[in-house]
Length: 296
Image 1: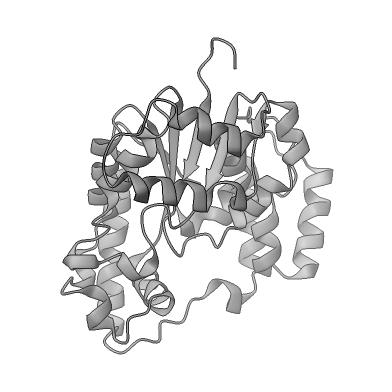
Image 2 (image 1 turned 90 degrees about the horizontal axis):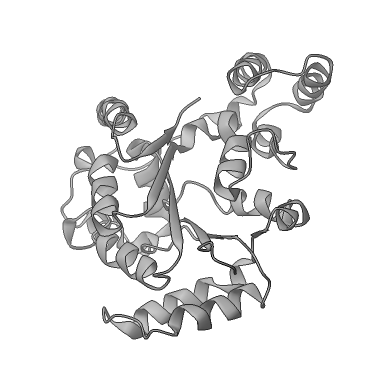
């Protein structure tokens, strides 16, 4: 791998923000990324391997050769400058998000263990966050809990602060670069996310930059949007996002962008309060000095 340290990009979630769509878009670019020295292995190459390695260590430091053994298994002896791995469950499964009444209690232990596996690499962490008003119902549905009370373990929905979890990520991995974005913004920033996670230049050609748009925009709107982009290529990301926003305003599929919250106890007043708190929290996160926050 030469003198330059291997870069490792870990997309660590959060749960219920992505459904592996980012990984699927990255895998569409396997050859392009390989040409730039970037390896995006399939999840079967590393998810179980890393999980079991961390579990077997039980908090103890890994042996000196652990990193090389893992990289040999994941990279297949390919000479890459950057390795990208994604797993919404890197910190925990949905069932354990509020374990012991603490929001992502395992943040420090899991992030710390993850980074210690590869002590010689430059590690970049990526985290998508989501409005707790939609995040909690979705995570509850994916959990094994029989009631919201059981799922939350005494934690009140209005107490969710992503900024607190992010602070703990920074504490556990102070030398890692951390990139954060809002799941609600992903249709506008999808291409930038793919390039940023891959370590590519903003001008690099990629496939799948509009993958999310096709899911939330009518076929007619998508067709018109692509024709417009070909006829009037935007000169900046800001211009491109303005065009996307304009077409979404006109051609968005309502059912695809509106999330129904159907959960006992989640009243309209509570949802409004949680959304207001989330907006304030996002504003706070965007001003955190040691966080790269991607915004439309």
